[in-house]
Each structure stands twice: as C-alpha cells, then as structure tokens.
Image (cartoon, rainbow, N blue to C red):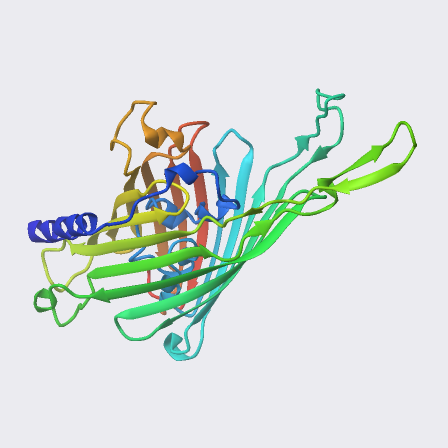
Length: 376
C-alpha cells in the first residue's frame, strides 16, 4: 500500500515537473460556446474531470473519447445537472453506446445529446423595463457522434464529431467541433498479481477537445430598420457578426489502481488515484488530483481538487485568482451500482457535487444501464 502511494506521488511530480505549457488567462472571454467544457455526466464530474486516463464508456464523451472503447455491448446514460443551482439553469444529457462485433472487436459507436434549459426569461426593453412583454428562452444544443476502438490490450483511441447550435429565435450560431483521444494501460507490478486476478493498474490518457473552425452569429436579429425623417426612405441594415474561436483544450492524465485487499486472490477494495493537467487556450492551466474508492465495484466514493497555476491551493481568500472562475475547490461524487444478471448487466445511480463561488454549487444526478458488460 505505501509503495503504491509513493509510486503514484512520484508519477504526479514527474508530470508537474515536465510541464512546459503556459496558460492564457489574458485571453479569457475570447472563446465562445464554452458550454462544451461543462461536463454533464455525474460519474466523471464527481471525479472533478481528473480521470482522463481511466474514464470508461459514455462518460468519455466529455473528457477523453478513447475511453468509449471499453463499453461492453450496450450502455445507456441519462443525467440532469443543476448548473449554478439557484440560477434556474439545467442541463439534460443523454448518451448511448453500442459495441460492434463480438466482444467489441469492431470498435464502439456512441451518440450523445446535451440540451441546456434556461426556462422562460422575460423580455425587457427601454420602454418596457419591467418585463411585461412575452418571454424567450435561449436554445443551446450539442449533438455528438463518436467511434472508439481497442488497438491492443493496452492501447485505445477514438474520435468524436460534435454539432453545435446555440442562439435565439432570430440569431443563431452553428458549427462543428472534433475531439481526439488515446489511452494506454499496463501493469506496474505484474509479478505481484495472482493467476486468478490480473489487472492493468497504471494508465495514461491524452485528449484534444473542441478543435474546429470559428463560429459566427447570424440572423435577422442582427438588423435594424431606419427611416429617413427628411425623405421618408425606409431602409434595413444588417450587422455582420464577428467570428469567435472554440474553447480548445488539451487534457493529460495519469491514473493508478491501488489494491487494498490482503489476499492477492480477491479484488473487493480498490483505491484509484488520478492526476490531470488541463491546458486551455483561453484560460490559466488547471491541475487536478482525485481519488476514487470502490467496494466490489458496487459502491464508489470520489473526491477531487482542481486549482489553477496562478492560484493558491485550498485558499479561502476571495481575491485569489481561482475565484475569478465560478467553479473552484473540492469536487465529490458517489455511485451505487447493482448487478441485474450474471452476464454483467447492471444498473447504477450516480451523483456529483461541485462548489461554486456564486449561487449554490452544481448538482448532477445520473442513471446508467449497462448491458452485458463488466461491472463498473
């Protein structure tokens, strides 16, 4: 146990020491469609997004698409996030994956849908500031299609195409974004594993997300009517919307499973440590450290802490740079999973919580059905 913790710590320090990237906080606010960086899946969001190297199944859609290759037969996930609770904003999310061929030899395909619900917002104008006019609701919808495959027992890779649409009734921006990811797993202590249980305990993951062309708003809402008081000429003019970038980012993660069982022939208790480095082209670098404890892969507890490279970890000073972001600090999550049949079919309930500087945090509840796959 002590040696496992030491190894994980050394790996984390090596990753930190080898980091040569610099964030771009001066470009904050320079990208659009930043909802792409909000993870609506309950299991991985409870991990604080630190499990780039070990994410599995549908959860990989918003972290590292290579993990989709580990889906077994069929997986269906529905989740709902209360974003900045108290603001009246919710995210409804649905994911589906299907393995192709026997045992997924043909790879895995997946579909994901994320829709933001802002409720009804009163329309106000200069002449009607009290909101007595009709209401409106912004439309934000992301639809993703992905494919991932195991290239060997150790290496998986995948890519994702996401269609982006956001705007109002008369102004809209649409576009596409691509994700690419790879995961590698191996065993650091093969000699210590029993003949009955052999597990790959060390993982590395890298993903590039939100790569694509710039977007532009367009529509009749970017126009105005002008009547010349002298001549009576009636004209309609259009404003040209400026282009904006996608919130491109890179995730680099490490993960290590520590077995807590006294006997090498049992695998009841697992403690996984994860480290993640997030390079975002439009904000400061983000570092994350997370842990997940699992009992028989039926009950799981998660905790993670994320901080930026210009912030002080665990600081409570509101002037600290990390508080410029609405999300900070300690992330937590829990999963209860029950097997339904002997072939690996299981039902799970996931919950996660993230604190926020404003409002009352983010709460995510998810329901998952895995058919014919391994538990967990």
